[in-house]
Length: 326
Ligand code: PBG
Image 1 (cartoon, rainbow, N blue to C red):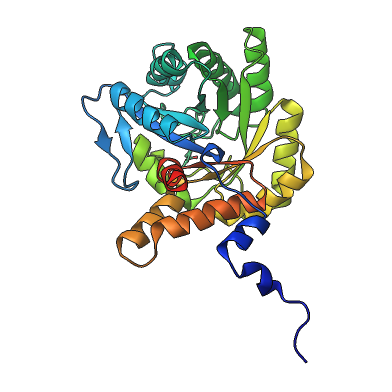
Image 2: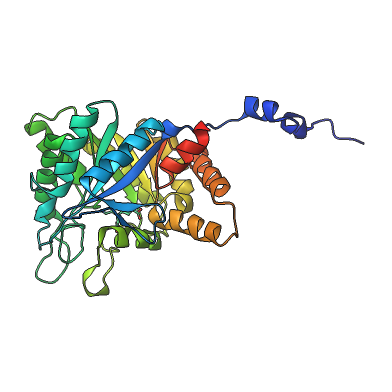
């Protein structure tokens, strides 16, 4: 007896496969994370993120021009300050490096490109935590909210169309929404890092922004425990109730169940962050000739879309956008 159902019929030619494909991946589904450093005379390569740099204002501007030409959907900026302090005041200083860079991109692109700002204190604090500390070294949630609110207003004022709180403090989205509205920034979008796990995959990022958590510490007191799935539903629900416009899951590949859950449960756009360690793993294996890096990147990014993400933050944005265009 031969089979009557033959799924292979639809796989016979590239044209048939293209016709029935369920998932698409386009340059404008990708957002490029970019690092801009204060007091740098030339762009500085980030060794653990091959192809990426701590940028000067000028090299940032030319990299954004390349990304814009390739049709990427947006960029998200991370500032690397020259000096840090206990309160991370560079994050909300109107002349802090992120704000200076945001103003420059606003002048160059206006509303033609979606410019996002990561909103956190860790790049700016001397102790490397995402919030301010109490005397016992623990992160003070509510004192941190005031500083996030100030940072959001500084970023919006400098031209960020989207602010993206990544610190995992309770109530951060509500505090930021109120501060933005009170300052007249009712149109500024909040993309909440809602389901953000305490992950080993952020290693290269910490090199990229020069963050070392004091005393060999970690973020398990505020980022989520990777053993938990339903906890993400709660985090995302709270963020939507507090006014988040977009919900993000981070990292991506090890949390596709969470992406799929939230895409089904919520009626706001979902994004996922394919993080530094995910990029570095693909690059390292590829540089050893063990995998075809571009093929694996395409497979991973498509899988994240298939799970339900509307768009993806990824260090592959420029490279894969150019591949998709060619
Ligand atoms: C916090 C922040 C981190 C990342 C984005 N925002 C680091 C952390 O939580 O320790 C990680 C991104 C990546 O690994 O690519 N400001």
